Image 1 (cartoon, rainbow, N blue to C red):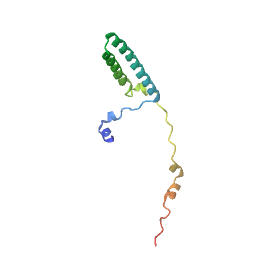
Image 2 (image 1 turned 90 degrees about the vertical axis):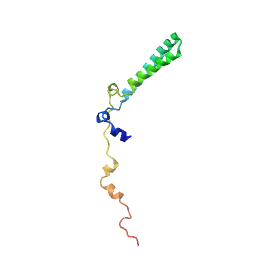
Image 3 (image 1 turned 45 degrees about the vertical axis):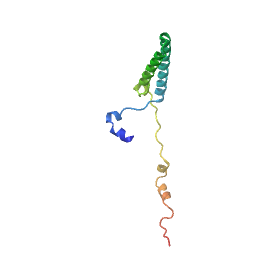
Image 4 (image 1 turned 120 degrees about the vertical axis):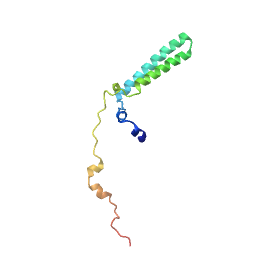
Length: 113
């Protein structure tokens, strides 16, 4: 996969691909509203025309519209980024050089007879 990403132009690789938690909630809500609205309109129109296929076409159009509005990480979904904590030093960094001495094998320096 890294090979494919490496072939993309720099402008495409720099596009943001994340969505914050509030944006995820907003996208889910928009998706639900669009689907329910198009399902209701499609049901009514299909009932008037007596064609179930019309209902499915309208519902499919709502699905495509909701996918276009909610799947890409539009800027509206990145308004409240999560503040990350600073990284804590690892155990090795705390111990410093004492960990190197402890990591040396105990049998080193002994000769076999």
